[in-house]
Length: 309
Ligand code: DON
Image (cartoon, rainbow, N blue to C red):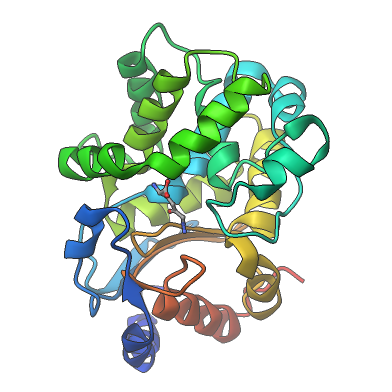
């Protein structure tokens, strides 16, 4: 269906190019400011029906907050849901991704969910490994398996830029250290978080990660799942309720599929049992979501009846 329908995919891309002008490239991490705001592309990887890309899919970009899905997966594999959710909540925050306010006002000082920065830094502090490099490699190895792309690795410049300017994240982390949410070395948790955000990918990688989740943790073409489908169910639910930050409700109504955005303009989307979608459109809105990218996902959802409800 998808290969045969490349014309439709191209039309959806062309129809939405104009919306790239409605967003701005993130520059609070200076290195991200070099991205081309007019770039737009997406890849669809389907179950049993191949992969198709349209637009600027050669563009490389960093995972940014999309890494939060992968780190949550690794933490759940390492510790199981009970231990992970003892430290981080499951509720949508309704606040911006880097908000600090509820860390102090909510019971137990737990970050509300693993998709906001506070939650993701707490999750990074739980990833097992003897040192930061080993923890980072464990996450990369899982990405290599999911995507069959062993070239996925750190973008050094973005990592250095994140580290040099990540003071809000430092304040979140040290606050969580003071309240006992972070139990391990706080600088190591931050360093790993900055590295995970700086993993460089293309749309096709996101689409394959999406397909892996759509297949309930099974690599396309393989029989047995690599991870427990119950863990994938948790990831997809959290993506649905919190993956697009304080736009998650609106996105769930208009698009209706689990998704996770990053300030680089990438979006990872999953249509359970059907496909994974990877989008890049670096021009983002004030909530941190790719403006044209969200429009593309809405059009794909309507065109192919992808809404899960
Ligand atoms: O920590 C940060 O602010 C970034 N590395 C990630 C934020 C992000 O991607 C939010 N997404 N829309």
